[in-house]
View 1 (cartoon, rainbow, N blue to C red):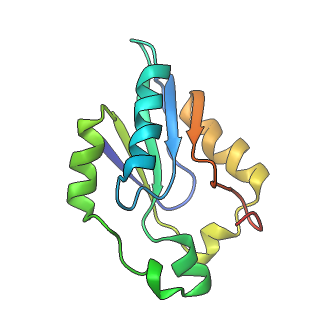
View 2 (cartoon, rainbow, N blue to C red):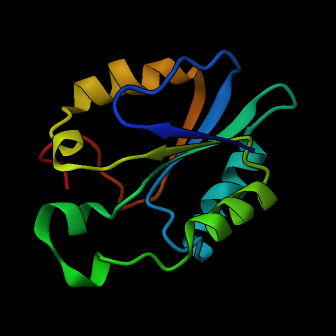
View 3 (cartoon, rainbow, N blue to C red):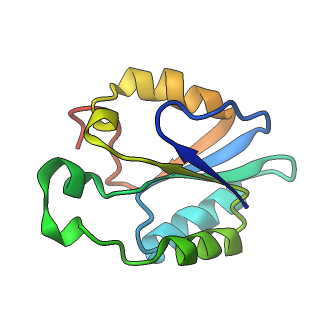
Length: 132
């Protein structure tokens, strides 16, 4: 599995990809369901990628202590993602500056780089400034 550290706009991806977006702080049953959906949705020629954040947005933006620590270490998270067939892991450095990204910028300047065939998100996921 390739890990890409993202500090702004992600690099261009050539391979058509099914993308799962989320914090993925513990790869719990909800996350596993999303990863299984990605596997079912992808074709033989498509990759599976995860777009996840280094810090929980609620910790960065609101200082909520319960979100300060992750449930799974970065190393173990990568191992788990790879075991679910993830080819590419976008590890996004979530900062206050990144949080100011508008929904339009996120879609047309960030996600557009990734050559996506589908996006899979959890029911409580929101993106772009002011959507949390």
